[in-house]
Length: 247
Image 1 (tube, rainbow, N blue to C red):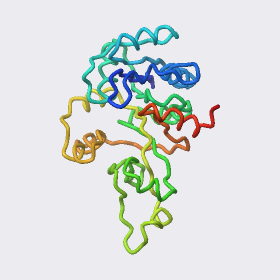
Image 2: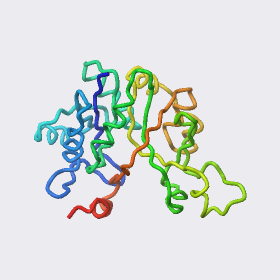
Image 3: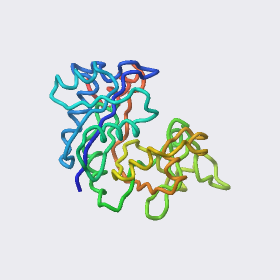
Image 4: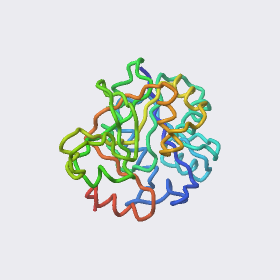
């Protein structure tokens, strides 16, 4: 199976404008994401999809390929599909790599790429939730799974409810998983899901993957031991450096 890695990188982030260009220990965020992505040995090509010429020119300066997309895309999924169309090359799968995770591990990419067997429509990652505070953090998206590890539902709330047990002990009585937000899509499925209208569940939880589930698409969930460390605000930079133990 041929796989293209696409890194969406938009300039106009509400909480952190120009985020892809911010310098972190001598390199821009987007350069760090690209260099980590390049360490994966399972991608046939890597491109950066951006809405801004400043990012595109910077990307070219460190030897990566940039494609300019429209600014108004509602999600990275939509930006990935436009970039794929503009590229004019054919691949079996598109792997959407978060542009705000400068210290992602290439094994995160490889673990998703390995499930791209032609039958899988969409795949994403999950990590076991063993901490009560994290479990009840509504900023952390939890996944309800079928027996074959396909997603049944994603929620910011804790599902299932453990009847008759103290909430602080729930994680000891059930295997809860939280979402790690990297996706791979079969290219024909990517085309279809970008044409779907926002759904009721999606609007309720503010989670675009619920639109796909509501419309009958299957999302395979892959275990990972690598946590997701996104940078959403300028303050997150120091926090992520501490978490990654980077001096």
